[in-house]
Each structure stands twice: as C-alpha cells, then as structure tokens.
Image (cartoon, rainbow, N blue to C red; front, side, top):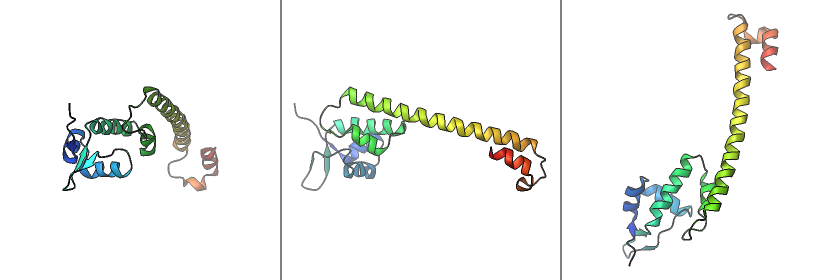
Amino acid sequence: MQIKHLRIGAVAKETGFSVQTIRFYEEQGIVQNDYRSSNGYRYFHPKTVLILRLVKHYKDLTFSLKEIKALLQDYGVEMKCADIRAETQQKIAVISAEIKRLEGVKSALEKGLTIAIKCPANDKCLDNKECFTKFLR
C-alpha cells in the first residue's frame, strides 16, 4: 500500500497552522518534507499532521520550541512513551517551582497591600517612613 503524501496546504488545513508556520517548523527541524515535486511543492508524510498536533499540544502546555524539538529529535522513528513521560515529569517540576515562587510573590504583595491600606491615604509613601519601612520588609 502506497502512502498518500500531503502538500503543505493540506497539512496546514489539517493542523490549523499557517503554511508559513509549517515552513518555520521545517526550518527549525521540527518537521521535514519527504520530497519536493519538480514544480517545488513540498510533500509531507501523513504522520507530519500528528507531529504538528503534538507540537501544538505541547506549546499549549508551555513547552518551549527547544523542549519540543528535543522530544521530536528522532523524526521518522516512533517516539518512545518513556521519553515523553520523563519530559512531562520534568516540566511538571519546573511549573511546580514557578507556582511556589509566584505564591511567594503573591504573599509579599498581599502583605504590602495590607500595610498600604493602614497608611493614611493622603500621605506620600516615601514621606511616611514607618509605612515605607514596613512595606519593604
């Protein structure tokens, strides 16, 4: 059975990516065309659609293009579930650390807001040393 390759426009329609974005991913080594016709049309393996859907999914999950490229470095070879699992676990750890950092920032802002609410509304913040000093702690 012969595989029916897709032109770039068909890949764009199937994935929701623009032709320009697919060309960009091709330049970045994320996908590759299987061949070009004599008139220069790019023809892609149908699996390219699945790969681009995976790219979109991982981009939505805040993976960088570099991280996605690492996952897809063996284009044309079946990706191993263990590799995807390991990368996903690592991303979860990074996001958990960022959440913890942002919770600390939120806490500091809430503390500052509590102090600012207690200061007289018409005082200039830098002139009220007591409020300003508490705010910086």
